[in-house]
Image (tube, rainbow, N blue to C red; front, side, top):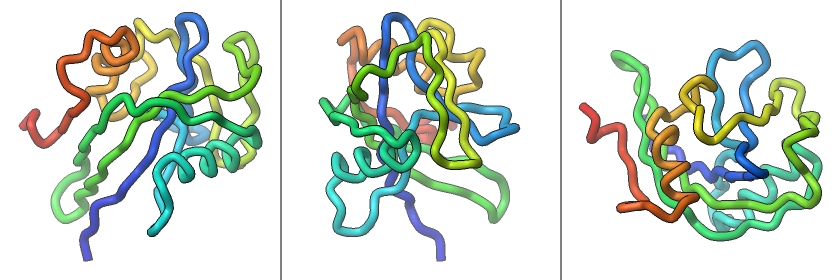
Length: 148
């Protein structure tokens, strides 16, 4: 059965960089976070996911926007909705790369004005995040369905 995955992601900004994550050995990055469990509020899910990934408490702030994403080919199509919030995570700053508490993940700081070189997925976030964080947004919505 095909389903739509509901994801919650966090944007942690320090100076001109944001915290990204990737699978160890992976070729692309994404925002920290993960799946919302049935019956779990989005903000609670994000705090739980960050705690699981970084071992740190987090303050979940404002909703920046929602990104609808579809990828894959043939019968192997994935579909997700990501709710993207700003977060604060104590004294975590860009001159210290945090250690992941999950063996398959690694974190990195990347300049906000150069997200394409981080191969950030979904690609629409490369433009949306700087706009959202500068409050120059025209919409808090993006869909890769609309790019087709």
